[in-house]
Length: 146
Image (cartoon, rainbow, N blue to C red; front, side, top):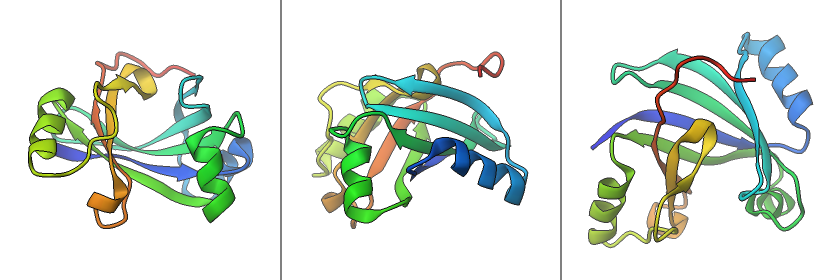
């Protein structure tokens, strides 16, 4: 079962400038930042609010670290903006299997490591009315990491 909007992924050319915009304009602060070598991105998670399932909702700002990354290719084609939406689930394996059984293409055979130690997979945007959709099982969060 999907339990929340986990995050909205926003692709950007300059992570530091984009973080500053969200800080100055909306007062959002960086909860977590990291470089994900596998996905070729530098990212910042800006916490928006807690959710009733014990998780939280975030904005995930993504800056590519290499030209062959999915986010770099997306930016080259589309420019900055909303890249994907992510839904939280207690069990990404079971949820992705259930969605696959409904005819939606799941992009990873096995979930991969995502932000903050989460487990993730993506659903094909052509099967989701043009929206790249991520499924996320969050790792337990003890304290912010910067």
